[in-house]
Length: 110
Image (tube, rainbow, N blue to C red; front, side, top):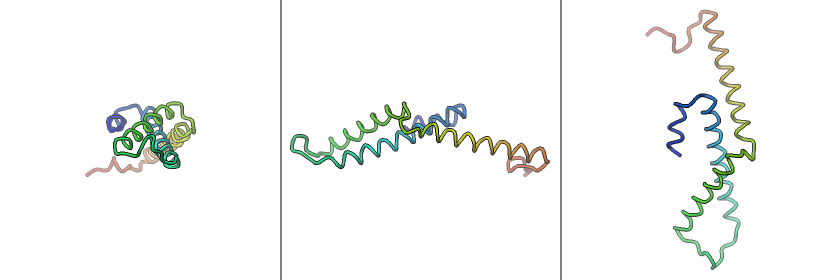
């Protein structure tokens, strides 16, 4: 996961948006699966143990990653569209400031 997040700044902005949204959806789905797992009653067939807890967490994450690839909740599209709109507004605002001769925060002489 850290490798994916580290690669986002070097990616194209559209790919970074989709990657970040997909990672968020996978995290949400993993937490949802873990919460659902807690509702299942314990049995003697597979007793609770630290190794089983680790396995269940890894399994939930793998299932969540596979589910997030298909965007079942529509979060990737919704978040990606929202970030694109925000970026477009920011670009227009900076463009308007530059057209009016107002320096942006990065254009100031130091």
